[in-house]
Image (tube, rainbow, N blue to C red; front, side, top):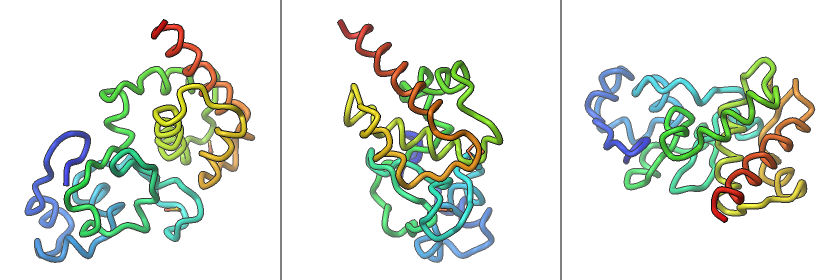
Length: 163
Ligand code: FES
Ligand code: FES
């Protein structure tokens, strides 16, 4: 598997996880990222696919990394919030800051990845599109409106930049 464009050294990840290399495949992707690779952006909330704080992209699709085993993504491109700026998502992160769309911040890495996947799929998303994309991301702080403002800002900026 590749993470943020780099091939993963599974032996090193296994060492960090304290497991044998052939056990990495049966380890949750969330644990491989956080404990094996030190990429702690994706957060564990519920651990059962309900909160979205662990959201990462697998081949461009937003998925809950707590529900995926490493062995299911052995040939996939995995992207985490740590790689978002390098893949052209700095404007999204800046818009979240500008719009003050962050409070405690726990949900934000997952929210950003869901929004990044949406903007790639739908360059000018409607509020319904944004609501749909964030259906699986729970935020107890912000009320979501500022997420929408930030995504609309990015969509406008990218469309203006493309014209
Ligand atoms: S920790 Fe994965 S969905 Fe909640
Ligand atoms: S900013 Fe606190 S849970 Fe979303």
